[in-house]
Each structure stands twice: as structure tokens, then as C-alpha cells.
Image 1: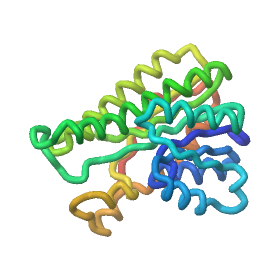
Image 2: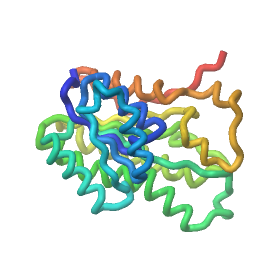
Image 3: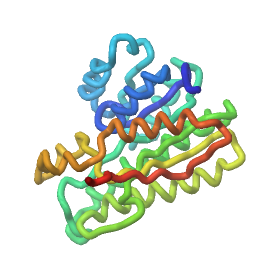
Length: 241
């Protein structure tokens, strides 16, 4: 159903975003992968199967920057003429557990700017484009942390709660348009995000986590649903055996 459509994927150079990029390419979607890191972006593009390389383009942009978000979106429109799918997958987590009183405002701003403001800026820029097309699908990658809090993880939880509230608001604002909006809230996912932790996790711990391809398969499922179907949120967690 989404063959020859155009997707913009933030955080598209690694982790969940990279898996989503590959999955959409296999579906015949043209993908613009956005990343603030030029080296990671190059590696992501180099990892694309040769048969799909004509379908993908890389855009270096920081989702925290209003100007860079605007430029990235305009670049996609200039290249492809439209945007059918927006995947907000750019995000960071905490390097180590810290209670709120032990954090500083610099850490707070960085977490909120990437996990919340970046999603807001992308949605604000892309949704009018989708409305002009009378169709589009926005998928925001959140976390089970957007539904339950815990000590030592307050900055991350606050950013994801905010992103969930933002997503729910955007859903309501677009109920009578052709734009659908869904959040995916996964539990722990085995991705590069764990490489930045102060205390590395073990292979045994990784083995119990979801895989990035699990999230990518949910995205493929969503974008192939009939336009009459809307799903507000999908919560997905590992199934232990």
C-alpha cells in the first residue's frame, strides 16, 4: 500500500530509526534518513542493500534546531515532492540513574530538546505538508516510560510523558483530517542507546530485550493499514519465557 511513498525518519542513522529505514526501503518506500551525526549517517547509508540505494537519501540535521528542521523538510520536498510518512525516532536516554535533585538544567534541557522539542518541531513542520496532500502518517517512537515513572530516571520519563501528551494532542487536532498519528511505546530495546551507559549491560540482559527489527515490523504493519483504521498507541514489551 505504501510502495513509492516518501518517509522522513529522524534518528535514522542508528538503533530503532536505522531498522525502520531498512524495513521501509524493503516495502518500496523512498526514505530520507535524518541524523545530526555525519559519520553515523554515512555508515547508515553505506549499510543499505545496493538494490535500495536509489530509494534513500541522507540529511544531516539536528532536530533541536528549528532552522535545521525546516531546511531538512524542505530538502525532502524538493527531492521527492511530498512526505507521506514521518517517523520521529531521534532520542536519547540517561547515561546513569540520577534523582532529579542531582541533575542540572543543562542535562534537563538536552533531554527535553531532543526527546520532546525535536518531535514537536518535526510534527509542526511536516503535518501541514500532509494536510495539503489530504493524507499522511506520523509515528512517534516513545517508551513504556511515558506511562510509568521510576526513581533515578526522572529526566527521561518527563521527556517521554511530554512526548505522549504531545502525540495525544496532535491526534485530537487531526481527527478530521487525512493525517493519522500513532505512538509506539516499547519496553527495553537492544540498540546502540545502551552503548552510552556508564555501566555497560551484559549480553544476558540484552538477550531479554526487544530487537530493533521488532519495532520496525510494527511500523510496517501500521503504514499498511487501510486509511479508515486509526491506532492511537501500541505498547510493546518483551515476552519472557
